[in-house]
Amino acid sequence: MDSDKNNLPSLADGSFNHFFKTFDSFFDEPFRHFNDFLNQDSFSVDLHETATDVVVEANLPGCRRDQIQVEILRNDRVRIRVENSETTEAKQGENIHYYKKRAFKKMERIIQLPFSVSEEAPKATCMDGLLRIVFKKGKRRFIEIE
Image (cartoon, rainbow, N blue to C red; front, side, top):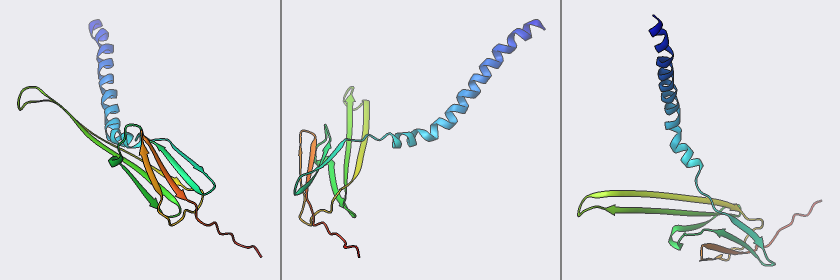
């Protein structure tokens, strides 16, 4: 009887550990992809104005021009989107794949401009990972209060 009492704590510890590991994995697995979605990389954006222009500068190190999309949205907003897909492959032998990795990375920011912008087309440049978009300021309209 004493030998059964000595085995009881070790059996309980093992089964409880297994139970908690199974319980944790049950809740972790469905949220793993959701967590990846929330932890999307972002990039810094600076916004400043001159006498005639509104300038948006986005720091996009390592991004090429063909990966960047800039869209003017309603209500004086600008969307900057970066999509990068890459495939890395290492082979061992002629037709045997030893290692293959595919990655897709998407970053996006929407920036509210402080002024209405002109209908004139903005100018965008991308050099050394710095995207620079220059908008001409539109006419500001004021409402007279009676």
